[in-house]
Image (tube, rainbow, N blue to C red; front, side, top):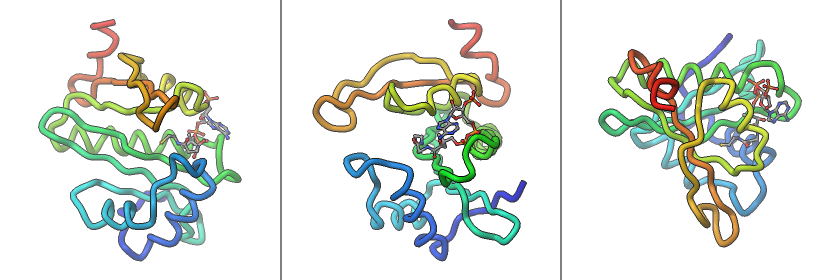
Length: 155
Ligand SMILES: CC(C)(COP(=O)(O)OP(=O)(O)OC[C@H]1O[C@@H](n2cnc3c(N)ncnc32)[C@H](O)[C@@H]1OP(=O)(O)O)[C@@H](O)C(=O)NCCC(=O)NCCS
């Protein structure tokens, strides 16, 4: 597994992933990703054997709460555990910086919900019109680090 910190040099590759990963209405702009890379988010890439970027994920943390903001894997490399490896790296990072829980928002009809469930995330609420009028978001959460069992125990 080759997981690396993303830098500004990865911006083109990340924008290419964004374009194939999301419909236009939910796509992040190039500027959004540039801000993501320049700010205090933790952005990681997954590289193939030729150091080509085939996946990206972005995380943030505020005190005890971490957020998974984005995870995208190129279509030809899906279903091989790459998305899970990126999310698991983010969970390890969140635990290391002192977070106790990780939150994410996802479209309820996104197949990624299955991946998140498998990784221990549980649905906690719905945010109406989160992605624009008529596009709700499912909010999912799980514990990290020593709080790994939080979601199970509080279910
Ligand atoms: C969601 C995503 C990152 C998963 O990446 P991945 O490398 O295929 O993930 P994994 O191989 O670790 O796990 C595959 C799981 O993802 C789900 N999945 C979503 N889209 C999939 C696809 N096109 N092919 C295979 N699995 C897909 C499945 O539920 C699968 O779960 P399972 O293993 O229990 O069957 C990837 O499908 C993607 O980039 N989607 C578009 C962007 C997106 O919607 N991101 C999530 C919201 S930010």
